[in-house]
Image (cartoon, rainbow, N blue to C red; front, side):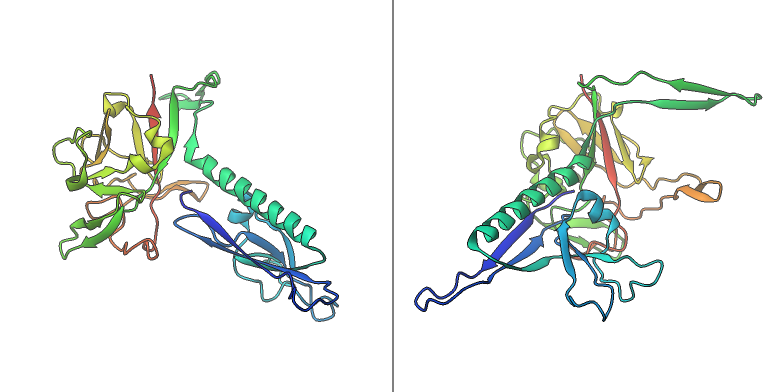
Length: 311
């Protein structure tokens, strides 16, 4: 995941000019986020019902990476329903503590847990191939050929990276579905127009956009990329795109040529379960036609993964 989680702490130490028997030290923490990072990082348990003497929902913990994907942000209206969950996530906590020391301890623990959360969410952005398993059918035979390869070494010769599909700047689309970036912002992740390409890039013919590797350490650390570029794999929602038609990779960077509408020949099923949905992306850019900006990214966010090979 890309982005930032910011915590803002609010507290009170009483009015020192008018001493009194202070026994309450409130602590309020508000989380905000940018891009793909979640702001709702605090897990609450909903109270069982009106007979519960403690009417307030209970703060449980700072969310783990699993909590982010498994617990929603909407408080269940009826926890007795079988399909509902007694937990939900929110972006603010309000605690009433008993000493300044307890405030500092809780604040420190919250910060440490959020650091761990971001680290765990980032793990999916840089994956190494560790093992391969292959099953092949034999024409005219009922048997299968199973190939179970050895585990890769720790210094694997490939790395799987997630690319940001979004434009790095303000995008536009005309009546002919021609997509452009009218205001570039090199501080953002994603794709930039070729007009903004620095002299260090070797731009291939027909390139419309280039990937802003400068702001992503995981990708910048792989430069220069191994050539020829067609040894690498770029997939959209699991379907391989065509090097030299849709995208181009050389030692200096990653370039977008035009969209090659990929297809699997229809949805793929196994025992009535959809394994892969047929792709039908339109337009000429990595982002959808209904993309407006990072606050309105469109109905469906595509997922691009790049398998880079190393020497």
